[in-house]
Length: 137
Image (spheres, rainbow, N blue to C red):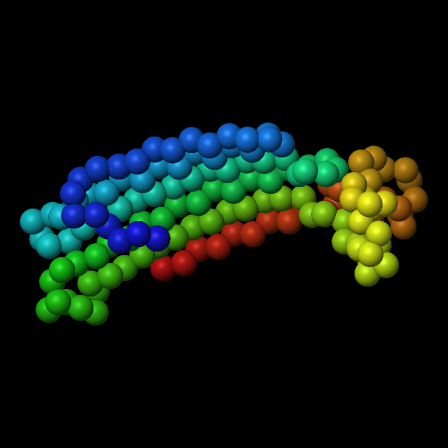
């Protein structure tokens, strides 16, 4: 991440693409304050569909970083907080033999419906969703 900027300002960006991809990102910089401190706050929201099979992915993140030019307080001259929450549907793992024949297994993925047989139903895509939530200071 870039350090806080010395001038007040901000950026907004929007991206879009295939497979339902879109991303919105915002950043605001405080500029250098009279205390000799500057900070920024940024956040983004990303959504996309899997490129094969059912399911999608979503990610929301936020960052705050403070930096001081006051070296007398060097132990608190830089601080940062970050949060990230990501949800996605996993891809069906392939065996080594399947990876040697990608032309035949390129679209292999989890099942899209329940059939009432546990050995098959545990490979239904709704049972194979992941979520990662990280917070750091």
